[in-house]
Image (cartoon, rainbow, N blue to C red):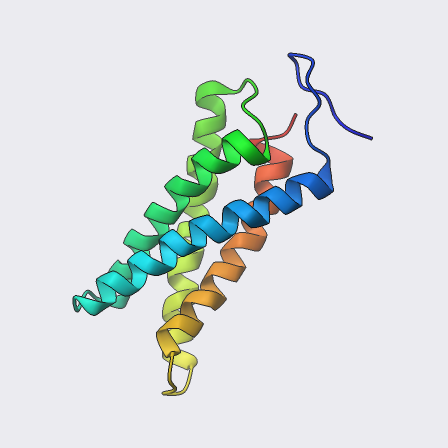
Length: 138
């Protein structure tokens, strides 16, 4: 069953939202990952590189998810406030998990990349559930 939005257009179902969320996630993750490694290449502290990259990836995700994944339906400031609160929480989780992974992983090739993947995966799982059920609910 497909939910409907207030203006009468059908909201995408769970599977369609999940597929779109993954596609938007790939784009946003590429932005995040690229900026993370760019900052690391300039000698930036890993926590700061992860913080800046997360903000850039998150900004990309917000606008793409708002438009393509969950729809541009009503919500205004309340929706934006919910998004900011959610991403402030997942920001702390992503930076914390990244730092923890860097501390716990052995010295291996691509250690920073693996830490990023672990932190991103954790944040992504939380974000989909909360975006769908709270921030962008129909």
